[in-house]
Image (cartoon, rainbow, N blue to C red):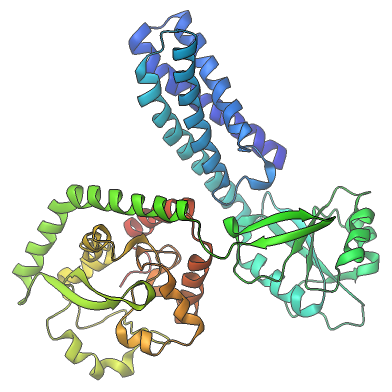
Length: 455
């Protein structure tokens, strides 16, 4: 499956690059041999640049932001290569190829890859194109890993069974058969045509893990170790080879360049968003004002980064006495933890239901993003009363700016439980990156237009 997916992706990138090049060259040169030759050269150059940035690495394709980062870097290097050729070789290269073709190529290739990935995830959810996987370790650790993988089949791991330190061990209560003891693992892998072996927990480590890798060398299975690091992923982890050891380095704080990039993205996109969406905000404000008494906008004090407070702006979606009526509705609260949620909240106006369904009521918060009080992506901005009731661990949500959207927005919105919302927020705080922000913004658009989980 991996080889076929990579081959299709290479062909997809080359086709997109050739079409984009033709779209730029044909209006300039007509349908000529030069235009066709330029399109072929451009396609080959783009595929080569993406390959240099590991955009066709089977382990990083179909999941995560890595392949999209490779497309961005590869497309940028194509533009640099064109400019370099024009300067050093005195070749007449149209500026349209650099300033129009390269950005269009990046966008078109990313969209094509996204569609290709979406098709793969759909197949995996249906049980196709999966990697037969066995999880090895102590029962408790095995149960946790199996549960996480089973809840996210689009990653492609189909857990066929487990191997425990001894057949006398209590089997995990996860619905997967015990295929043998760890000492039987090489034979179990061969007998069951296993593609991936995942080692969970601490039972196998050091020399035992090394010997296992030797034993599996006679098979075609991959050996993967699930480190005992909760919710730590992506750019925070790197391997540091030292003195014959493979040291796993965990990044403590985000580097300054990533913080600057996030700030530039926030301020620029929010400013452009305010300009483009001002007619929508104005029309919605007029609808609110004409259909219910009270101001069109609603202001509320929220807690921002490191506990600082600020005034958040929203389009009013409730009647003006909503806060006073909240206590009377506590018995009907459908939320969990510190969240108050009702699917049929009588305090919400008819216009407010439409605004909430498509998150139009949140658009004025772009002003908060421009002011630097919020970010485009981040944890939900909490109330002061909520923060006062936070346990110590949840306080970490305040280590980054609150966001207009976040992992909670693209993972169910109001349908999420309190514990799940907190888990997603903490995952974002610990692992955020600009690439993750862009992916969340893309998924937010889909969630908003579908109106999923909004009430």
